[in-house]
Image 1 (tube, one colour):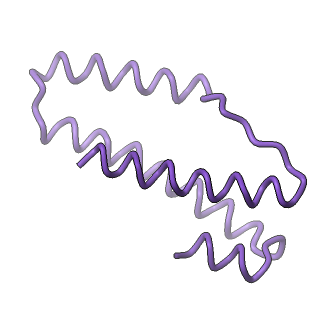
Image 2 (tube, one colour):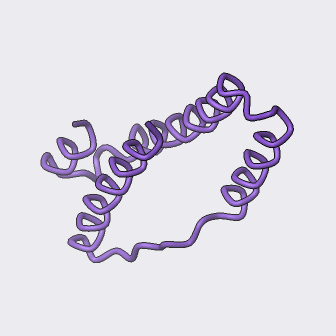
Length: 92
């Protein structure tokens, strides 16, 4: 499941990079320190919970929910900056 989700995420990332580049923007491959710390915390938590799948999935969902919330807020505050095509790309 995680493998497929990772592939989907990578595909979407590539599409967004193309759009950012078309607009003359610069993309970054760097992960923020908070993201790195979260990954370390997930690794530690997995080892301490004896690899309890429900607890690991709950933690993943929490992280994803936080990312989706930020994504939605950015979109809501910047919709006027998007073309019709970009809006379709983001919302499909």
